[in-house]
Image (tube, rainbow, N blue to C red; front, top):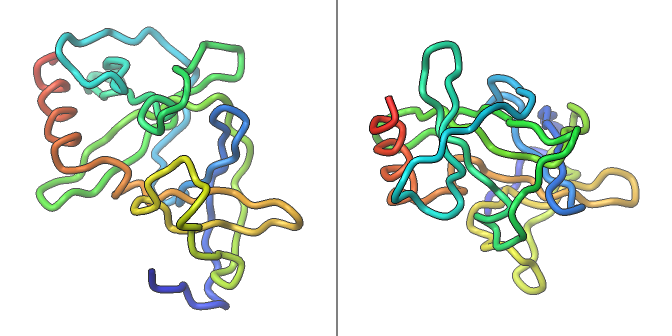
Amino acid sequence: MAHADATETQQYLTFTLAGEVFAVDVAKVREILEWSSITKVPQTPGFMRGVINLRGSVVPVIDLRQKFGMPETERSIDTCIIVVEVETAMETLVLGMLADSVQEVFELEGGNIEPAPRIGTKLDTSFLKGMGKRGDTFLIILDIDRVFGEDDLAGLAAAGEAAA
């Protein structure tokens, strides 16, 4: 993994999944929505909860907990949908990600990002930018463009089109 320039500062949105704090580059975030009615789509991967209508556009909604092998997200007053843009080799897809809660946007210098550990993590580290250090705590920084494989994204795009 190439290390970011130690003086380069980037903004991240933090959110929680099953008590763990994750972060995503704020430039990838379109908006944050309250949990709304999600329409299930048949024959989609287990981590795809369905689709939502976002101002006339069909947006697939992903349960990151399930994608990462955690228990399914349960609806609470803090549960929300983070709408992100994911770059693929062919196109930019708009996806909704379920989060237990959204915390804050903060700046992090490249020097405060460590490589992801190779042992002891529940996640496949190929889609981690690294571990961000904030004081005495670490947060898991996702590379949202790499969380889903090409097969996942092709299936999500097809599901969105089928629901349209």
